[in-house]
Length: 282
Image (cartoon, rainbow, N blue to C red; front, side, top):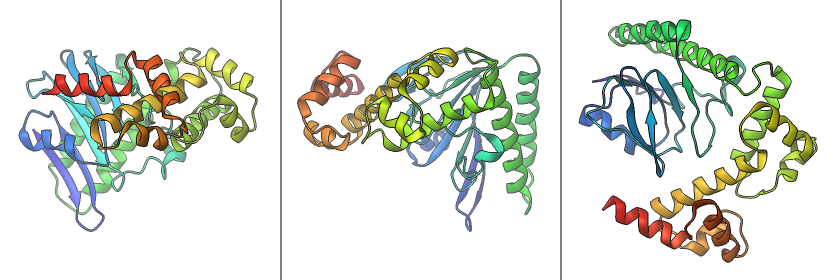
């Protein structure tokens, strides 16, 4: 099943799919697509970047265009909302949905939420409305779909906020975490230390460490390291760059330092990682 909306004039795309058909599977090779995957009936085994992930019943995962994912065609009950920046720009609309740097950012592990109760009912209702509006081909179709997507993102953001380590987090702290995530996404190739981001935010490193320790399950340094490792893996697997070139791309003047960093966080040096992964694929 692949139901889609597109506008030649605006180059915007929205797709509702279960990834069970070949045209839908081809979406994985297209660039610039955000993907929201909802497992409705049973666990679905996914490949997200270089690791396996089991998406359990009524869990939803939020993948950016940077995340490389694979979904089996024989999945049971998966539903995905796929869109590009032209259809809905999460940066431009951040003041309306507050999901940029929260639901969506370049983390090595995309955000996952669990649906139950009223939130599950809302998702069920919205999915039916998506089906209905994709069947109506008129000049208002795009705006109707955008309104539904915005509602889905707002509901998801609220649910993620409520499930944080500290659900009483105030808005200023949440915004600071989001801004930190966005700065890491923008500068991770240049800045590798928490103090550099603290300076950009006019905060102390200790303030950031205390904030992350209280509200989420990883340190601010872990956010930086995960983002660097994720990019390193992508470049190793999906580019023709040498290890030295990748080290330079990621801001390391000495490739040996990059190799030690990579092995510390993955268990393999870059050459062994690439060799093992490519062997597993073939």
